[in-house]
Length: 256
Image 1: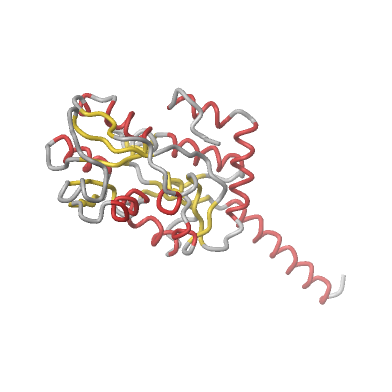
Image 2: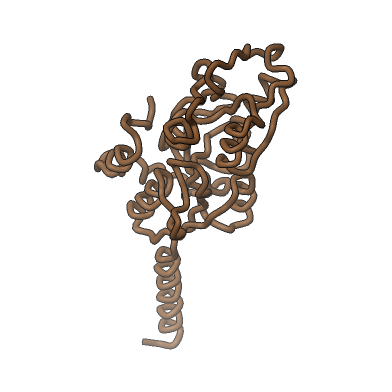
């Protein structure tokens, strides 16, 4: 083998090995850890929940090791853009506004949102009827978009964690709280803390604010979005999704 050919062979091998190493790198997933039953931190620091199990299943489908990275909700997209992690699996709804900043996989679930109030409440859910009413929502969410759009004269309180929202609702510092119905049930209404509270009003419908389902967010234009969509389809077809779904919910939350 002449020197030139040997050099080319060595270069090709180096490129091949570099590609293999890249494929072997862990997939860093941004998660929240404070949105029961989708994500939460146990006493020993372990992260559990529907989103966590889905993230791990997607990594398995992609044959990648998962590295879970905790992040407060309102910093999720900035941290993704800053390359703190490669994808977000944190019940992030797919909206037109967010699609200007990031790319999404296909949805991996879709559930409605409803208000929660103390039993016996009598609020008129109109712009006029909620003037001065204290409404609590998680900061930077589709729910914030909804209440600011439809109830501009309400006294809207923004929070960094869902746990803090429920705490203030229980303490009487809020009149209403808006949440995903499943998160509200398992994270509040079906717990001792939620005694004396119930859903208020009907399911809400505003795709412009509330989105078209929950997807995995990646950096804008990253082909990882298509890989994750294929992985979602795979875990739906092989029964992995159903096993995870049934662990947390009595119905299929994938939606239509």
